[in-house]
Length: 448
DNA sequence: TCTGGGGTCCTAGGACCC
DNA sequence: TCTGGGGTCCTAGGACCC
Image (cartoon, rainbow, N blue to C red):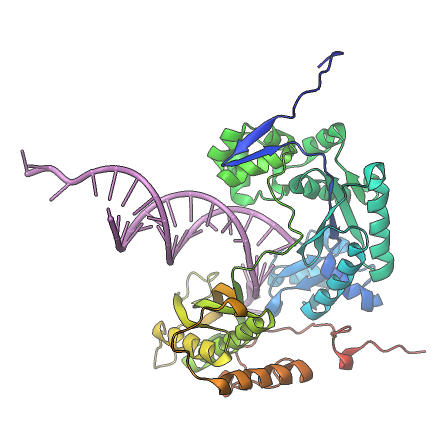
């Protein structure tokens, strides 16, 4: 340092085989505030200004909280039964999750964002990375305008973080949410501001630091984002793996995580559910497995994919160590690769039967969760040709008809008999809001 | 008696994310 | 009584081959 500062090449670092160097391209992360709660509040005014939470499938745990609920000390992923008293005392309103609604609102938010930058990466249902390079000094103003537009056009409040790497942009976003001084937009392109903020953010809040890494780092005396940033790269790799080494580099402004404006080919897909009541008979389990396999086949067809591997699993309640425990999982090859409902259901039920530990007296294991995981996904068009393809034109026409009917009249209008009609295994959702924007019968009505 | 080494592929499991 | 679901990436270790 000093008065004779010289211009020199920015320092480059090698991480694995990749050379990384300092970047001054601003990346913004725009994140919807309390997204699921905000979606519910769009259509139900009575939810505004009171503590609200949104529950996971089966109404089991908390997946979203309004500011009022956070202030009451309700934590993310908290089991609902543990906070029943608190909810009653403070009039906390609980909603079952309504993914049809959230997905639709998310698409609307994306539409607005697209008009603010040509380069956008949709990271999750409520977060997007936006490339702000080219806006120069106006980037902060631009970000603020983008935020206002989302608010005006969709009703959803957001915060924006700006920084040269994705990890720092996440950090900036965290600061924007926590500190009202930023007015919803925190820009960490400036070194001094960045350093100030990083000294005050605990490592547990950093994107990529989970509870395991947090514990390891704390044992080394590393508590703040700034301290993690200053950890030697080699030591980072030693404590974590290459993942932690990259994270340290990202905190220094060396981008290691690519901007993915074109979504990569997905690798796997899953349909898993907890049962409303424990499944004690193979019939019930087979019904649930059939329903999940049916849904998995639908998802494959929606994405124009076929799967080469299917894993079936089911297990008893892991939170009840005193009860008889059993967990089963089996992977099978699908040859030919398939997205046919019948192929998947047949294979899944056959595999599930192999692991069944039935007890004829009816006092068998109570399975609380079951699922189907598909891997080796390939686009239908790239499916390898078979020398002797099975001749099943009827299957294809049948699944087409199945999709058409369920598309038009709603999910589960037509199901395989195998799935059963009693649905005793089905998930609970006692507090679901109407599908305001995606079901004509559930449109909100206006009384004047 | 003394029984290689290096590469690749696959899988299971851990950690993390929203 | 009651504890989500759907993803990604990385590593270690076994199997297999020459």
